[in-house]
Amino acid sequence: RGYYQQLKLQIDSKATKKEIVIWLAVLTTLMFILCMPLTDNSSIFSTNYTLSLLLPVMLWGAMRYGYKFISIIWAVVLITSIHYYQRYMPWYSGYDTQLAITSSSYLVFSFIVNYMSVLATRQRVVSGRARRLAYLDPVVHLPNLRALNRALQNAPWSTICFLHVPGLELLGKNYGVMLRIQYKQKLSHWITPMLASNECVYQMSGHDLVLRLNTEAHQQRIEALDKHIKQFRFIWDGLPLQPPVGVSYCCVRSPVSHLYLLLGELSTSSDLSLTTNAPEDLQRRGAMHLQRDLKGRIAMMNRLQQALEHDHFFLMAQPIFGVRGDVYHEILLRLRDDNGDVINPDNFLPVAHEFGLSSAIDLWVIENTLRFMAASREYMPAHRFAINLSPTSVCRARFPAEVKQLLTQYQVEPWQLVFEVTESNSLTNAEQAQLTLGQLQQFGCQIAIDDFGTGYASYARLKNVDADILKIDGSFIRNIVSNSLDYQIVASICHLARMKNMQVVAEYVESEEIRSVVLSLGIDYLQGYLIGEPQLLSEIQ
Image (tube, rainbow, N blue to C red):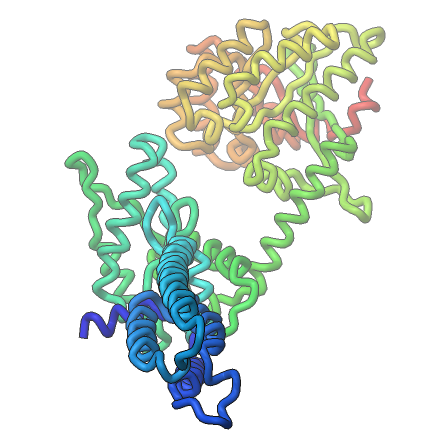
């Protein structure tokens, strides 16, 4: 039985039973004609000329049916033809020469047939191994997306379950890429016992996995899988790790078109699963809004890239007045859409951060502000401007050098620039942020902490930050007249700032009552619509 299985494995997968039967029939016919007794009515096919027809037939079999099968067939052909050689080689003058030629032909044919069968069999083995490897991820050793696509095509209905593990990115940065690889391998082994024989776990790049499940009772099975995954513990250097896993799923019908777009929607839905702590059904929630959101973000990304390349951004400035009579302006970035309407920065800055454009936009703002300062040096010789920085720029080691190069290029003094950083974001990477801000201060630039009071552990972070200006978030200033709690919070912030020798800016000063209250608390600078509305940078005096 084992030999029979080996015979079947060596036969080309494309060879059908009908083809094999026809091939055997042709071979049997040739052998029958060859071994028929010669008569007066015999044709040339009843002589040894028929041997020349055996070679292409046997070569076809050697290329298609494998070494083991062909060696048996050729042995039978060889024994039969040699045993009945007198029927196709009658005696005549020169018989010895003809016998030697026929024997040599058998020897050459045996070598060619066996060599070609071995070569073709080995080639099929190599090709089969290459095809199998094409459906296998070479690093994680799990089936890849090509294998998933093939499995989806072979099943009339399937359930795609998407597993999203964003924590692997941080763990991989700290413990190396092998942690991510082994985590996926261990998690797939943990899940496999709950899968049917025709279900599988598939590898995706990054920190994701995909499962193809049957559709029978898929909701109950996915809920059971989610509970099973939550019990998984990954041990790394004796430390049990349990990064959260987002789960999303949907049912699909073969053939599945736009698989990669579908996986993108499942990835977005799995992010929501991390918040709800439950599997998310893409079809129940609906994919149309996910598609619209994704297309909207991509369109915004293209608009931002075009704005950077063709200077479609424009700058506005809002005055910040000091109680001692000095004034400087905060630079505000704006963008227009195709209809000429102004796009709110809250709509395009998150997209810029998501697609890695924040730092390039910051440099565009800095360069265009410095260009304006250089052009207006005659009538605004010592004016200062405040520029907001994104977390990406603050955490870039090359950023201070780029700022210094621009200051030198436009011949602007460093003390004329104030860089505002949002305390809740930019200080996430505290070490690099402090280094970057410290270098900017060494140049002579001032550092302002923007929206102070809204971030996590504001006071604790402030202890380790050496800033020059503290901007109190407008949510505390807006109701300071009527809300005693906001009043006490602002008073405590002012007291803390004086202890750190920092100047304080109050945002959202929109009435005389607010102005009087914040001045009584010792605020150094005022900003808001009462003080001055934003206007185009080119129009400020």
